[in-house]
Image (tube, rainbow, N blue to C red; front, side, top):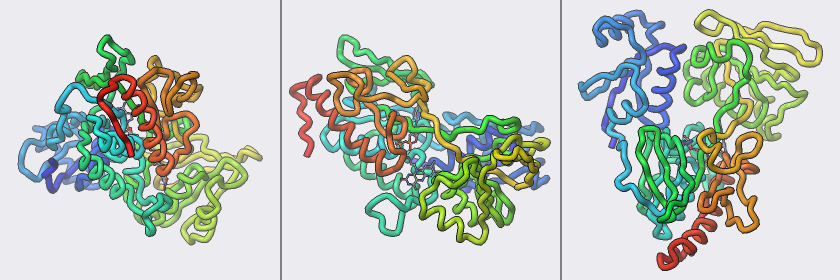
Length: 412
Ligand SMILES: Cc1cc2nc3c(=O)[nH]c(=O)nc-3n(C[C@H](O)[C@H](O)[C@H](O)COP(=O)(O)OP(=O)(O)OC[C@H]3O[C@@H](n4cnc5c(N)ncnc54)[C@H](O)[C@@H]3O)c2cc1C
C-alpha cells in the first residue's frame, strides 16, 4: 500500500494543520522528517520555492519526486499515499466504527465466524493503544509491547480472517433504521454510504482540555496532549505534565527519555496513579511532583513562554517556564455523531443494556452495539477494550441469528 520513502514535512510548532498531518503520518506508522521552518530559516525559502512564492505550511515533499502537498486534508494525504479511500462493497454483515483494540477484537471474532466485516477508522489502525509508546500490562507480552506492534499484530490477524479496513474515513452519521431490508446505514464525511444488519460502535475517547486562557492558542506550540507524538521536540528541555493519574505519570516517565526535567502537577493532595507508577516516579532523578497545584493560564506570544499555576489550598500563584506542557487530565468520548442515534449518558458515553430484552453490549437501538472506552462504565484499558469487543460479538451473533436465521454463525 504505502511505498513512500523520505517524506519531509515542513511546518511550525504552532501550526494546527502541521500537527494534524504529523499525527496522520504517525498513526499510519509512516516515517517522515520534520523540518521546523522557524528553526531553519533556509527551509522557509524552500517552502516558498515549492509553493511559487507563497509560504504555506505544512508543505509535504515525497521521496518519489511526485507532486508535493500544501496544507492537505487527511483525505488528500491518504490519496497521495495510496491509502484506499473506498470499501470494496456497500453492504456487509457487520460494520464497526473505530479500529482501536475493541473494534479490532470484535472484527477478528466476527470474521472468524464468517461474517463479512468492514471496519471504518478515521485515523490509523490501533486507536489510542496504537499511539501509546509501550503497553506493559496487556497479558501475554512478558516484556511489554509497543502500541504500534500490538496494533499491527491485531490488524494482521483481522486481515487473515478477511476483515476489510477502510481507514482515513470518518463516520459522520448513522441512520439506525432498520429499513425495510433490515439494514442500518452509515455515512462517511465524504458522503459514502455503507449498510449492514448489525453495527458496532467503538469510537473511543479523546483527551480532555483544561479550558484555561491560552490553552487553545498554544496547542502544538508548547501545549501538547500526546507525549509519543511531541515528546522528542523537548530533548534536553524542561517540561511540565498536568495530571497525576496513570496517563500523566506514565507519559511523564516517557518524557524523561528526552526532557532534562519533568514536573508533574496534580490538583489533589496525592497522585492518583497506581502505586507502582508513583514509586517509579518518586525514585526517578529527572522527575518532580507538585501537589495541590493547578494551571490558571498559558502565556506567550505565538509560542508558549510561561505557565501561571496556583496552589489550590493557599491561592498563591507562581509562574513556571517549561519549554513544553503535556496535559493528561482525562478523556471525553468521541460520540458527538451519535447524539440522536443511541442513548448516551450525561458525559456522552454510550449506554448499553438499558432495555429489558437487550442483548449483550446492545445500545438503546436494536442491532446497534457498543464496546470499549466510549461505552458507559467501561474500564479504559486495552485488556478491557479487547474483552468488550469479544463480549459484543456474543450479542451480535444472537442478533444475526434472529435477523438471518439460515446464515449460521457457529462461534467456538
Ligand atoms: C496516553 C495513553 C496511555 C495508555 N496506556 C495504556 C496502557 O499502558 N495499558 C492499557 O491497558 N491501556 C492504556 N491506555 C488506554 C487504552 O489505550 C484504551 O483503553 C484503549 O485504546 C481503548 O480502546 P478502544 O478500542 O475502546 O478505543 P480507542 O483506542 O480510542 O479507539 C477508537 C478508535 O475509533 C476511531 N474513531 C472515533 N470516532 C470515529 C468516527 N466517527 N469514524 C471513524 N473512526 C472513529 C478513533 O480514531 C480511534 O482509532 C492508554 C491511553 C492513553 C491515552
